[in-house]
Image (tube, rainbow, N blue to C red; front, side, top):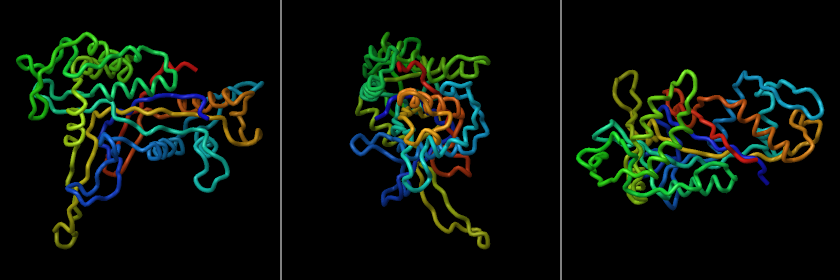
Length: 320
């Protein structure tokens, strides 16, 4: 049973390929998608593997409260097998798990404002349900996503319409959509010193569009990046073969939830993570995740050509 939770956003900084294997369609190597909605996703197992790799290569040291003793400083990478589980065998279960990363906001080319972030009522309702499940203490429960709406003072309007890709949409400015855009902008692009996310926070507040569920599905199904790749014969200078790969575009925003249990090991091997109750141990696991996590990690395929660079932004405010 999972006892503690930590939601977080994933902001795609370079095109991301969470591969689903080869197919016989137009795209040889498509991305992972939900079967029933066709929405893009990142499998929890792949997300966990990428985060585990970042922890294994980390030189971070964090302070961990120690039961009945002085707080103990530990190296993050020393506790990876204990928290993430052994690489092989079934010695013990992992104490940290991850939900599939779900799509939240998808970037689409716009006639005005360069691009817009789109979402839909179903996606917002899913987010609300996931936050309700973990008893997240915030304002999301009151959100009412209305299709065909934009925030007030939007940069996207052309003669009372917006143009996304080659499609024209009738939209209306809406107070509730303004509220939703502001809340997410402040959580995904938080204000800090120096305020490096100010431009993106202000853009998100103005350039969010809530489309209908069907319109959103169409865009996330047809407006991903498809890149042609080939191998060149060194001797002849000719292409040996040609294939097409699908990517989530830069500026895609997803979310996931880290879920912690007590550590399934004897007291001695738990070390600094041992505590009086299972709930307190799970809280330490979440603390380890939050403190040890790097802001930028790599997810998915084609790491050596710079793909899959992703920024992680923790969503604070979980009621524990």
